[in-house]
Image 1 (cartoon, one colour):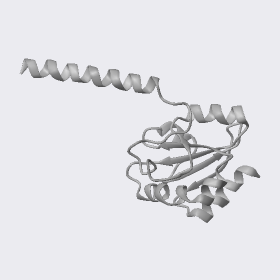
Image 2 (cartoon, one colour; image 1 turned 60 degrees about the vertical axis):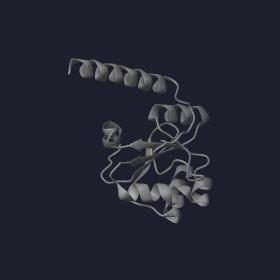
Image 3 (cartoon, helix red, strand yellow; image 1 turned 135 degrees about the vertical axis):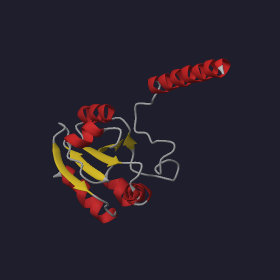
Image 4 (cartoon, helix red, strand yellow; image 1 turned 90 degrees about the horizontal axis):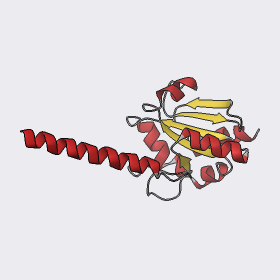
Length: 153
């Protein structure tokens, strides 16, 4: 039993070190979770997975920010990821907007700060980080294009 405990301790240390190295070497541009519905299924709206990196990029380029709050248990979130966010017209509408995809369960303070009260929850910020539009719930491609157009007005 004592040997098994030591083995699990070693495995835990290796995992923590690997996670630490992975966080250190994350790419700075938009990226997608390898296990998410957004990964590996063709073109999609590009998303950062880190709010601070997205904010930095938006501030540097004077672009608005589109936050897509989702959860692991939200069926409509996955449906939007597979359909709406892959629509060529939505991708085109989002080309001058910095996207960030955040798990609301992991980013509870940000979700709360923007008033997320249902998922998916969408937020548009101007380049200064001020909220200009929000929406709770599923949007089809046409509705999403209208939502994203608010960032340009």
